[in-house]
Length: 483
Image (cartoon, rainbow, N blue to C red):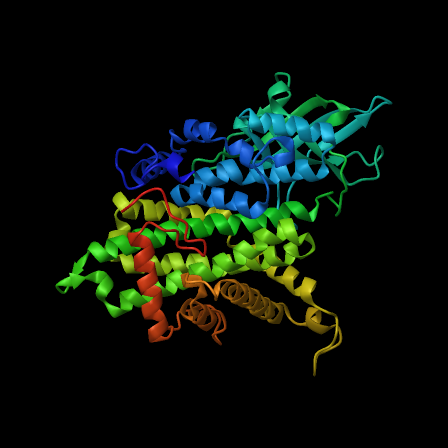
């Protein structure tokens, strides 16, 4: 993927930062992305190996997605966000013939999307009427805010079933949008968004669309709306990794700018306050990446624990990434307000964070869900009857934040333990000390300075990685360009 995208700092690269930022100003995806990604075969990354694709595990897929998100979070979400949710629904719920048909669609370059709403979010589901012994399906109603439905060949969506015909509240459908007769599918005007401007978030309205009986995904259903936890778990795992990839690029851009900027006769990056800012952001990124990587691995290896880790990773990213981006914007100074060059790209990355969902009521809901899922039901000393869940909402939020930090600290410790006998930076204690200082500080994730010797080691490693074009997360993979 890195080689396909080329050097982002090359102004002549049609997939470089300059082209990406210019496309964002126009409110569209960078035009050169579609043919490059078609040749790369992004659809094959979503298809399991047993169906002819390249998907072996979720954490491997996320590495590919992050390579694209470091260049443009909008394009990464377009090709790996809701398409991934739709693919997961298809692989987990679909019958063998449905899975094969979906795999063939993706492998030949077709596009898949999915309708999704966070649990508890208001939404209006289309209605399904199942008629006669032939069980012909008629779909009527509106599905709100689907990503790129007008560009997709197929849509995975929940629809409410006529209760007189079925005991289920809803069923998931695989809708072949390309085969819909004229007048049965209406794509509504897209909404204008703050970020991710290349993605068209728009409603889809169905006017008596007739579907074959095999359009229903017949896997297990849970919950009133028939939504399995898998969709939310996968999306909560994917979104932080896209945000962290954007933070990786933002930190790299800020580092290069501050090292090239002269203040008081020296590089701005030589100032102690600037070095502290960069080192703190670097260790925050690494801590988040440890937990996000653990959450991705849980989906494939310990699925029973995947929901807990995805909740914790989502909440941690929501707490850390916006604060880290703000910190970097302060470091950029007046340059931050110029909408061209590296600062224009930085502003685009900052805008793209907002529609990724790392704010709002569903973040608080994720934290409370983590509290509920980890509560043993046993009363603590001096605890009121009902345990943690009987506490005030404010107390539960505070407890959720503590739980999130403990999940992150354990992921960091496990990462260090796996590498302590190696000569890699992950085997050194400095970054772990820095992560623990920030994660376990009494006031939570704030701006408390980290130890000076830890800061020196972190800044030296950040400099090395930026100079050698290495990733800034725990993987430190070599990128396909130099700066």
